[in-house]
Amino acid sequence: MEIGLLAHCVGQHSYKELPRLVGEQGFGYVQLALAKAISDVDTSLGKLSPGLANAIAEEFDRHSVKIPVLGCYINMVDPNEEARRYGIDRFKEHIRMARHFGAAVVDTETGHVSAKYNEEQAWELTRRTVEELLEEAEKWGVIVAVEPANSHIIGTAQDWRRLADEVNSTHLAAVIDPCNILRDKDFHRQDEAMREAFRLLGDRVVLAHSKDLYVDGDGAVREACTGKGTLNYALFTDLLKQYKPHVHVTLESVKPEEMQDAIQYLKRFF
Image (cartoon, rainbow, N blue to C red; front, side, top):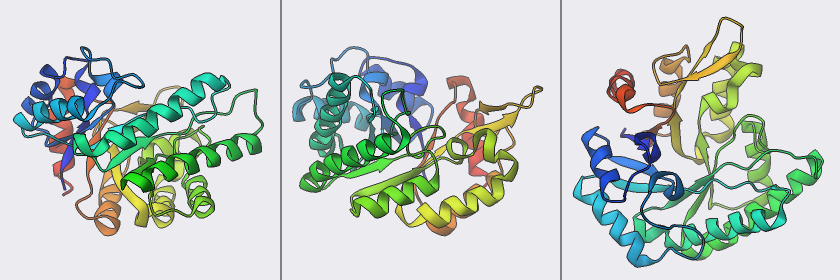
């Protein structure tokens, strides 16, 4: 098991400074969302190239950090059709350039229902969008990872499994983050919900995200750094070992000053 980081958790920096900061924290890999993490290079649609990807990957390699996953978060049901199309085309560009970064996976969430679409229309649009992304991914040998996230179109493990059944592609994979599935509705039954999520997604998981949850004084469920909440990490990590041994585990919602504590907390379970 290797512990990695969402690269922008150390902040947005130049493409030469960013790998140094990640490497100094002891991480062996990152999930790299270019627009969120890199400050000195334009990575908007149409700007990526093998040369740029190689330059960035080489800087990370100098600090012994790999880039197995690119993050490209898009809103598949954006009510602004121009913005929606831009996001789709940018994701497809990430797919085409992924191998030049050393990545096999491009990750996204799906977006929220807006007033423009009812739930079934939003679902249909999401399914069609994922199918379009998968068509591109199948050409380039890349995995499209969709992360279920509470209140998104794909918000639960059940939603993800329905999507997988409908699109029927081995290039679709899952990112599992129990905190994004649980939230207020299911936090009181977290053990049961985690077991159900792994039953539905376990065979298709390519990445796990790690953060924590706790209940505040008003009874609301809040996010925290790994090890600073009350998520059942013993169960979460046991399920990871059972279903996906040696899967990448990526820290998020963590500040630089919290990273070493989070790493040590996770290592207790592996």
